[in-house]
Length: 66
Image (cartoon, rainbow, N blue to C red; front, side):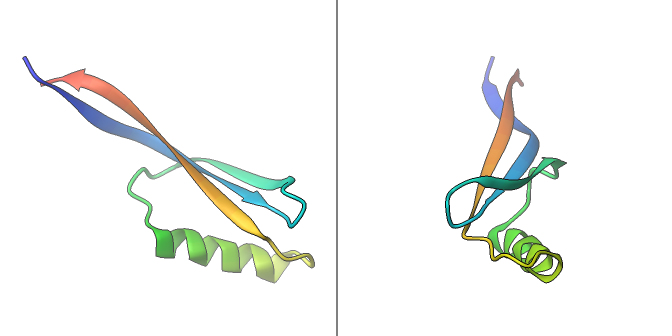
C-alpha cells in the first residue's frame, strides 16, 4: 500500500504594508500558480485605493492510499 498527497484546495491571503489581512480567498483551485496569484493581486490593486504589500498561499492536501 502506498500513500500519496491529493490536493484538495488552496487559499490566498492578501496583506497591506502593516501586515494586516486585507482579503482572504478560500477554495481556490489547488493548481494555482504564481502568475495567477499575481493577476489576482493586480485585480485587487485596481479596485482598492491602498496598495497590497504581500500575498501568501496555503494549500490543503489530503493523504490517501493508492
